[in-house]
Image (cartoon, rainbow, N blue to C red; front, side):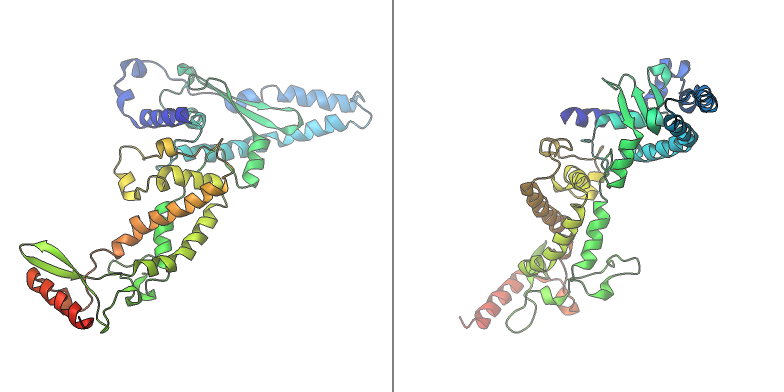
Amino acid sequence: MEENLYQNLFLKQFNQSDSIAYNQDFISNTSDYNFQLLDNAYRNTGRIYAKLKLAIENNKCQDETCAYELSEIKHLEQAPQTSLDFLTALTSELSITEDSNFDPNNNFKYTAANSVLTGKPGFSKSDGYNIYLDLLPGGAQQIVFIGPAFKEPLVINNTALGSLNKTGTSLVASTPDIDSEMNNLLTEVGIFSPDMVGENGQLTAGAKITEEYVIMNPDGTPDYEIIDIGNGKGRNTLKYDLDKIEKKVTPFINAEVAGLMSSEQDAVAAWNVYISKGTSVEEDDQMAQNANAGSSSWSYTEDLPLMQDKKVLFEKKYKEYFMNNYLKQFTTNQFPTVQADAAVFDLAEAKRAKAQKFIDDNNL
């Protein structure tokens, strides 16, 4: 797992760096990216096709039904479309390695394969790389990547890739768009009134949690928290019943987590890139590279399928992530809706008045 992390981060840095443009050896030499993938794969198919046809016409099949020959002819006729479908699906899978929030704990060979397939500088035939597309008996096909980044050739079979896709599983785990999911969750948890949601489905700039969750005094007025803004001045901020809010949002969070768990590899990616560390999307965007869970990462080969204890931990940390990075901004330093209560005031005087009010309200 550590090798994947190191190699993926290295490949990402290498592919995004401009340094190769200043490498005189690279720019003075020819880079051959003509892998002739389809040409090499179909070079002998005409001869094979003709041989099968002759066997049928001359009654020299393997058996009297010519089942094998007819089947192989059918496979050869379908092969070009199969190759195009295979390469399209594979290219789509490998392109995930270029996502900004790609989890570097994925197998680094797929990042290298994408670099070869997309002709990145330093991944040409001249650099020791090559790709082979092989037509296999029975209509199957495989693609083979070789080169310095691969200790052993990377072999991907089209039937295996197709079966994975049908079950919703990928070679490369894509990291969910946590920012969009969390912002959508804010509008769904029921602590904001409908008029706080804009036409784009997101909370408006001035959105506030409904008064139902504001802590009130016995007389029905808000129980403000006084904050010091300096120079002996203060102002009121709303206090929220965080326990009540958590009870309200928890069922929605659990439902969201259940949806994520329908694709456990995506949940692992979300854990590794965001949830485990508890950092916000904004914090990750400011880093030179996407942060990752490091030693607390979950492995795609060792931790899938996820055990129950990890599912419980994921749900707990997902809730913390939502509360700390998305909901907290609406429960912290929120000014009163009553204009008079939102004014700046003398801090010492306000504290005395608040203490006296507490004494009066509680008959002390």
